[in-house]
Image (cartoon, rainbow, N blue to C red; front, side, top):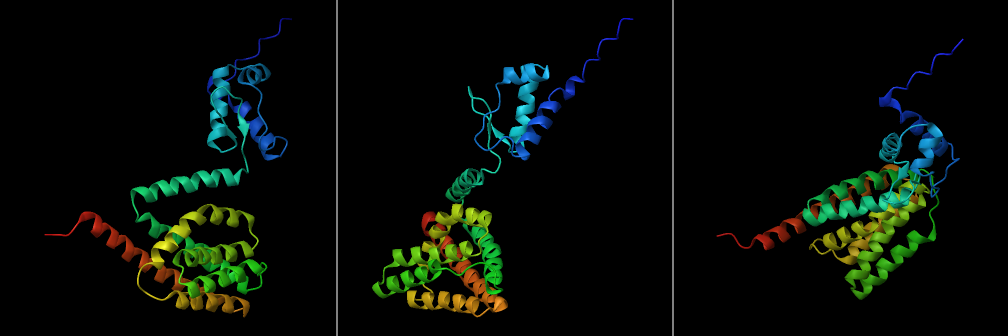
Length: 251
């Protein structure tokens, strides 16, 4: 008896086996970040499909964030490459700011969401309040004594970053770290708006830290919210002043 030939697979699903197989190997850790997939020709031979179908499968894997393709190179596994992804994200955000400074106000909203959660959990006993926080405060005090605005702004940003890192959440620290340069820029802008002296600013940060150390979660969140809300208002004033200056005097 002559056996019936195997039916041709659905052409629209030829790449599905490639996607399923490599996705499983990447998610299981068999293929690690930095590993290279076989060439398109090799994959095609292995799954008995055309290189066109292989490319369709690789495109889906790339869309899912599991691989990265470059012309002339085999696809590279990039899953869990959080730092590289977020670095690209930060550059995209910076490009938005360059086109429209109002995006800086949205960054302050992101800070508020991050930092209120952070100080509340630190006050509740999570994380470790290490020396980086105290070091940042000391840097701010020293800068205030010397009336060094640049060093003060750098210390201010370092204080907030140290709080986030103290929680011990690596992904949150990576996200915040990649936005750190942008946040430092915002602090420099907001601190230039006439509102309070650098010494008053130091006292405000010391108060937040004291509430955290005292275990006052609600108080530390309230103080941080007020601090960021005030900074947002100063930022909006600075942006408005810059726009007025750019547009020139009205007639």
